[in-house]
Image 1: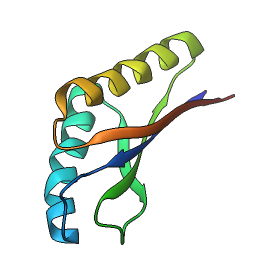
Image 2: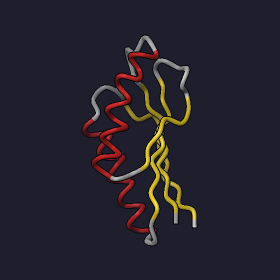
Image 3: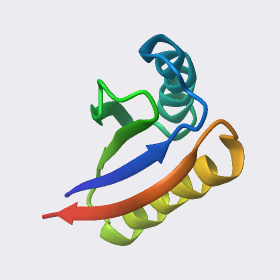
Image 4: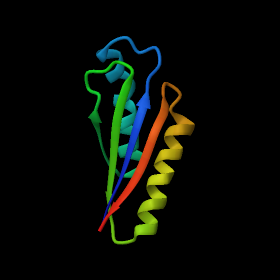
Length: 94
């Protein structure tokens, strides 16, 4: 089973793509390291103040995958002060 978390982020006060990358890169590395998820920027690569980040996990227990990705989402809300979550969704694919 595959589980994905898609998070639409707003980065207020970000005035260049270089500044955006400097804010996102540590987040992506931390999510990969802390939660053992595959993570990438998926959309809004040319927008200064928005980003779409995706996290993915594989496993055989849907409840565990759902819970693990909810933990990732809550961590972003609580520990990433340079942006805010505009939207998020978790999808499970059998």
